[in-house]
Image: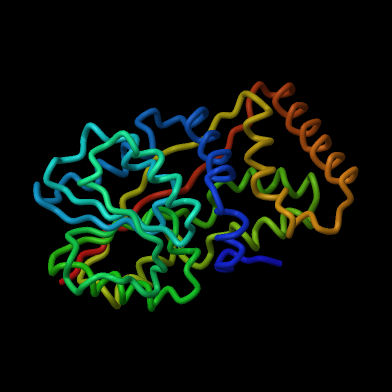
Length: 280
């Protein structure tokens, strides 16, 4: 069974392209109660960076932070976008294709072996990715190495109880699928609760900035798409026939639609935020 740190599965399965990530992001964009928006809020946290800055993003995915905030990026910033998945780098290039190529650089990079010089970046952004890294201490040492003195790591992650209602819903659908989803998507390795202790050996100060938000889901299909993005890959559904897979999908649809019909909406609590860690 693939796990949250199974890099082969991440590159060739779950994150070979942006499809699964888009299904999950769409639920947040449509039904979040915080209308400021996650990508705008993350960019706000970078406001204290110098007008002339080099910024490295690890696990950039489709480059949504920069695509959503393109008009706000200072002209003096040079941004190096990296991901373990070549498919994600292709998507990032595509999403920023209309932008000034001189401001962006793209590379396939493993955060455990960052191929850049010591003290070469003012900031490193790791948006919901450190829990995917098999050897996190090695990655944190690498991040600390490439940061300039006084530079910051901005590391977004979830709390232990994030979206717990979705996992409760999945338990109703199939306890085995819920267990498999937790193996692949649980973030116990690096959370808002335990992240400070992991960052402290490498940085002189660590501050948590919480992002207040919840979901109020009033339509079934986006939530179904979210759940299926977690469970329909070949590894998870391997023991089911195509007919049984379809029945699982149909059962999910019936359950979600019934809950929305009874209450008008499904309320889903979120626990999410950002660590700001400073190199001394």
